[in-house]
Image (cartoon, rainbow, N blue to C red):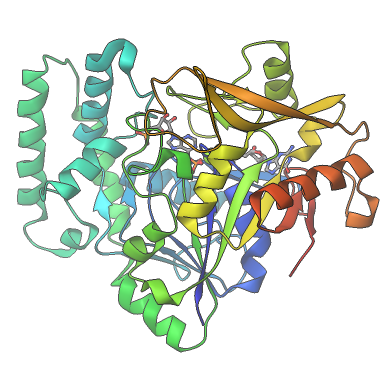
Amino acid sequence: MPVDVLLGLQWGDEGKGKIVDVFTPEYDVVARFQGGPNAGHTLEFEGIKHVLHTIPSGVFRKNCINIVGNGVVIDPITLKKEIESLQKLNVDISSILHISRKAHIIIPTHRILDAASEAQKGKEKIGSTLRGIGPTYMDKTGRNGLRVGYIEDEDFMRRYDKLKSKHEELLEQMNFEYSLDEEEKKFFEAIGLMRTLSFTDSEHMLNRLMKQGKKILAEGAQGSLLDIDFGSYPFVTSSNTISAGACTGLGIAPGNIGRVFGIFKAYCTRVGSGPFPTELNDDTGEQLRKAGNEFGATTGRPRRCGWIDIPALRYAIMINGVTDLIMTKPDVLSGFDKIKVCTSYKIGSKTIDYMPFDFVNAPIEPVYEELPGWKTDLTEVREESNFPAELSNYISYLEKTLEVPVSVVSVGPDRSQTIIRKK
Ligand code: GDP
Ligand code: IMO
Ligand code: MG
């Protein structure tokens, strides 16, 4: 059985958590392949609203195995909090959660380094979630990282101290003030909890499950436009958020990737700094933020809002090999007379329909086409036959221009507010 992948096509927060939860009954395994606690994946069902950061979004469904892959970076403190809040909801993760020994650990000084690096950048800061993601991936690629599997070794403390000392030297050079004691205490308590969890060689486990015919869904974090290679560099995260990341982040061979579900909002949002050609710094942007409740699930920061961006979406579809599109939040657009769609970018006298290399500094002006909006509330709609004609028109337009079918439409945050168009 090939492994299916679900990932974001924009700047994150497309609704990945919600849709993974909706899809999970069709799968035996859900596996996160990259990112860390910079992610905030929101699930809503039966009156419960829950945000996951590290733990895969299959965790609320019975009999689903949840794997945190080698490509993920784990903050033990956040993981402990997540486990405790799941326990309050009577979700016992002990038999269903497995963590790759090859995943890297975020230590408290990684988070301090993240803050120091952002402070140094001043106006050019990335707008990081300050969860230590960048410094941890830097230590991974720099071959200094602390891996989950080392927790089982006798010399874990030696490795930890060595890494911490390296960070302390850096922080001194950066002249950054910090205090560590409290965070270190919490860290070692959380390491204590991690010792009770199931560590696994997840690449072996996943390939074995695949051979047994189990259905596996790989869950991405962030979005394609935040990818370290293909995103709006340097305003990106530090991992490969694209479908290839599911291969390296889980140990799945490329030939074993099946469907690639690319999820996007019916408009566009971004948290943190960086280019956003269709951003609306006006009442319409404010209206989207309010109607879409666009505030970060991890940091609570207001999300920047704007119209849908076709050149960027087309690029993300190409890089990921998207086979199925999933559109979320068209309900937020209800009431708009016209909906704008950015079809190309004007840069000086040139008009292009792709993302240019100089996405960050080029004076990009979005070129829009207008489509009629729909007036009706969508949140109670459960059948495609009840879609207003203008919504059907919007979907057809997107399918035609993006050349990929829209298989699922989400019309609200709840599990039940989901319309499957094509199996
Ligand atoms: P993720 O990071 O991709 O999992 O997305 P987030 O959870 O950060 O942000 C998506 C937000 O939109 C969450 O608050 C979801 O509950 C909510 N959401 C998801 N799908 C829909 C939808 O179709 N309509 C509306 N109104 N909200 C949605
Ligand atoms: P999910 O999985 C939206 C953004 C940050 C910042 C940049 C780098 O919930 O979609 P980092 O902390 O990774 O160094 O921040 O990336 N960012 C996200 N934006 N959703 C996310 O995750 C994000 N994870 C990181 O705001 O601009
Ligand atoms: Mg999110």
